[in-house]
Image (spheres, rainbow, N blue to C red):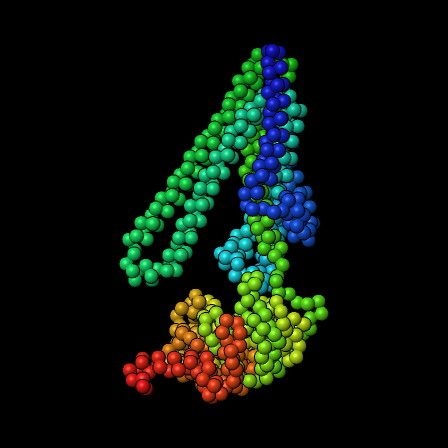
Length: 633
């Protein structure tokens, strides 16, 4: 039987080389395929940055490694004990000796289970802390980005960065890294134990490894394709559902339900076919690997059994029944980690890709930042001045061209003009949502760039055309987490802006539930709630950007009354197409193509008979036509 030895040695060498090639191949694929995610970072940089989150928990990870050693000891020692038990039974030793061995095996098993539980608990708790830290950092950084940056990033992508991507990173800390280390140590430990028992049988086992590696490499190639098909199909159908469920009213209005259903069924079919292909790949790979495992077991039983029956040796190595039992168990513990390495490297690759996407967002430098010497303002009077301000969203496409004006404290100033004239832009610049290219903006005589952004915006209250209400109740939408405010104070603010007119009719009052985006309230009711929200935060400057554009006449009268009251609070800046809303403003600034055409109060501008007079006449005549009255000749 010595003629088999050279073949076994060659097979074993190929097997060991295959293990090394498998790890190197997986690492190289991890590096190359990561570029498919538009990566711009080296893996070492990503690891270094991720380790910053793990560094505060180095004691926990060290404890996990120590605990993990007990599980590895069980994987290595348990086959030896089972083999020894088998030989003890066969040799008919005393029951006390057999009981001691079984007790030792049971003890190691219990310790292993306890260690596995402890390892899982420590890793899960640590992973959740790391996950929470990453999410907080990402969300905080997103909050610091400017309006321009946020407008250029799809909301769905930001949601994914905060919700999904940190999960992949957390899984890396809680599972992948530890499992990788454990599998490598188990392979080394099992291989060493098998060599000590019988190096010839070990060489036989290693000769099967190249086939496992070959099937694994082929499987990874096809599995990536089917996973990509499933992911693409899932994304496609989710996007389709999100869009069409949001616009389902339009589908019903135009009677397009059948066509939309046909499109949905087609996308569902693609997803079904993709998942079926994935099932086929896994359905073929797993039986092939299991076949190799069974083949190695059969060879072990045949070769080892033949040697045991003939002279209890094989190629000069002693073979006992205990050794055969131990090798039978070791084969499973040897092959399983090798198969798992490929999947774990794939998971590690996905974690690195998610980390790179997160760090790409976090590496975005906010375009609007505090100056090093920025100051805090405890209060402001509300004096606002623009000095030759030039601003553009895109290079050389000026939205404002040398705009200059001066607003005194507690004045009410309105901005009017055609769409795109720069009205809303002026309001955004005052709050420093964007930074100007030329000129200067002053608040109470202080350049707004010298004021901390959080301090500046704290003194502003904005009411926009599209009011955003959060899911919750009326109280939470008015307070926005503001603490130390009683219900009576909330209702006082509501009465001040006439929002109590509908809140008192609600069954639950301030506790009335608010559905997504406040769709269970009318546009006018939402606007009144936004007025109450602004008032209760006691701003020094109030901004109304088309706040009365989408409301009915009855609600407009309530809002007009509210505006008269709000004027007493501080400086008020208004953008409105309805000139009836701004007739009582202290100053009206008329804009066109980013340039101020004229300024003055309502009567002064009508007397000039300029652009404002033309806008007012146009709206007045339109209103007369809608009321069915004849226009003057």
